[in-house]
Length: 469
Image (cartoon, rainbow, N blue to C red; front, side, top):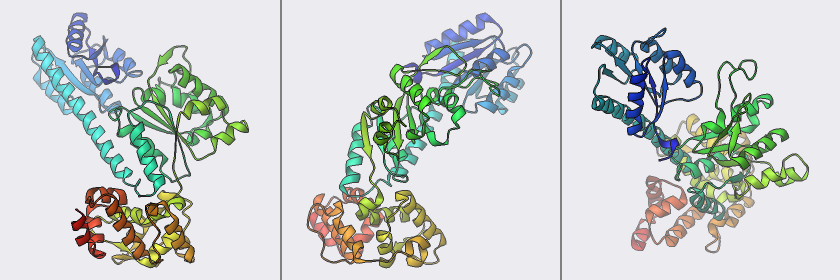
């Protein structure tokens, strides 16, 4: 087991013999152990390291264990604190538990007794970590549903994500704003071997130029005005996991050089410190700029570009895969209208298909959320769309754009320009491709099982799909 996955344990007691015994017991449980002889030393330790478990004596010089408990819980609510109390002072221990202590042991204690208490506390820490990971998994999976469609371009992206999820190779994600670059980064992280480790997202474009280095690499106490305590920085926070550098093209040239050194040496140096700290971080970067053109004109370092661009994932603009719009619309209807079975009128869908979507999938999602929020009926029509979209004049190019999309790669395009015929033909062809597998068909079409059955019934395809199955 690596250090990143081990419980970090801090023992606080003014008796050296007690500290040594507790550290020996902690080490036998596989903990990374540290000690502090008083509350002040413990708080100083917490400026640089955040332990998972703190075991503190109730009676400490200058500051009591209860006051230390309050300070720890105020700054680090996820750190679990256990109290040691002497002379059978159960009332004080109970009071400490009311303030947030997870457990207590009474002095003098037996080794097995302390061992069990630490095991219980460690189990709580692991349970909280697993729940957090599960919530992030669920949130990511819900978001990843937006990466739907049967077009060749989006399917290529999904296949590439599946191949990258268990690697530590640097990845550069390119694409216009709103295409889902962070979504892809989260998919690579949370669907792979590093899912239980940190995922730290950094918007390089929003960092204050004078503070970028301290934000990314951390700083020591007193390094500059206002640095009242040490900070480990975003790279160190991502240690053992993934750091996502969004809009990497916005980094100033001098910071590009420092980032390149970090990637090459796999170590960082905090502002105000001469000590170098080793890190193990997978880097995923993203940009909506043309970095090749940027390094040619001297605004982006060529060596950094090649260091980041080991594997490139390009996300297509929504206007390049308009055949996926009906599936995305169904997905967003399911997401924002949980209690209603809404659908979009043909006229509204034609407007959605005609529009060029400069904001890409994010703009489409916002459009559907707005329409669902402001609706007063169960059919979303042209008047429910934003003015910029409903003002588009629908021409025959709409149908042509859909017919030419990769969704119809497997056969000749439908002759009719009617969107219902197009949708029916698409569903029918997907079923033929998956040999009647409804689960796989729903996944390819990007719609829920309920929506799929509704479509099958609407287009009278239930019998044909049952025959195929």
